[in-house]
Length: 390
Image 1 (tube, helix red, strand yellow):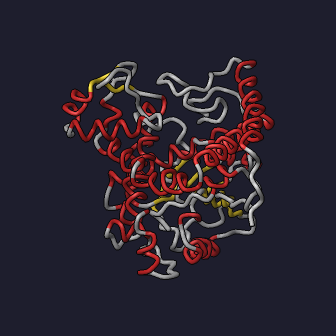
Image 2 (spheres, rainbow, N blue to C red):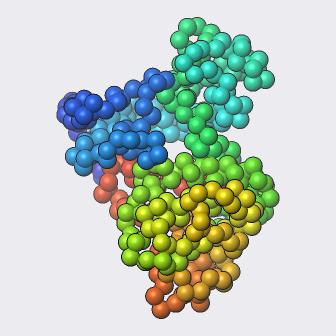
Image 3 (cartoon, helix red, strand yellow):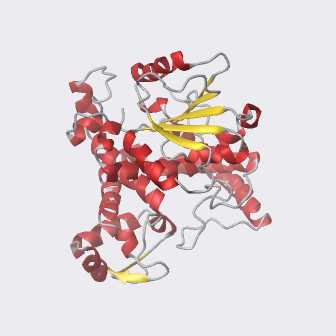
């Protein structure tokens, strides 16, 4: 039997305390206020991608107050809504209502068609994007209930901070990847479990069942450059989020101590991680390995770009024996989590013969927290599993 929840009054009091801590921090440091307006700063200052977030890291006590504030707000919402409403409207309906509406916006590029710092009529928006006006209106008004777009005057639509983010290429790619790859597989989890009970094969995922494709996800992407490019855009966006930020890898390992050593960035896609490390340890040499199409594209794009002088690209399937011997570091950043235990082990087994006496295998991946040891929202993010690859 679960422990009794605190009263709504107690929760509201805790919300007030933590809200004051967060608000005081923002005000006293002249940081952007929290807002959903179109011109709002889209991140909590100090938690966004370092390339566009110039603000200092958030102090521990403020980060904890913010975490507690978010958890308490959701708990208060759930208590006030009652279990029946939360189960039906917040959980069951969100998948095929909010997700489907957002997929529609992505698919027809509606966010790009809404002018920044201005408004457009539903009629003009529909004509501009080639969609049905009535359907478009209903879908956007549904998303407006979650602060994605808003209706400044009847019959017109403008951006909010959230809808404006859909015009940012890398974040748009993430939304597209989730809703046009993962979303299709999400409804097939049970069917895949029945069809392939206990299977660890790479082509037995819900994504395969949903899309009717027999190839493993990434092998199929090799045949579809547009979908592969969208996946890499998604990875670029994820890499900018605080928990995925490259700075954790850069600051968490003594790269400079390797001197003029060699780093093999396995599954390194565009080489953005190697490039970031090289700025801290400029003497290092990097070999970025990925699929043939990716490598060919990156060779063309980076041939004369500054910063890539010590970064080379090599086509390699990491399920086959590693061709580069005795490297100082073999880096697997967010690789193993994409595969079942069977294939994660195969990646490491294929690497072993190449290891020299001083070689290190550096695995940088998520570690699941023990239940109840972090905030509920943080644990939910950690337990998020994409149906496209599981």
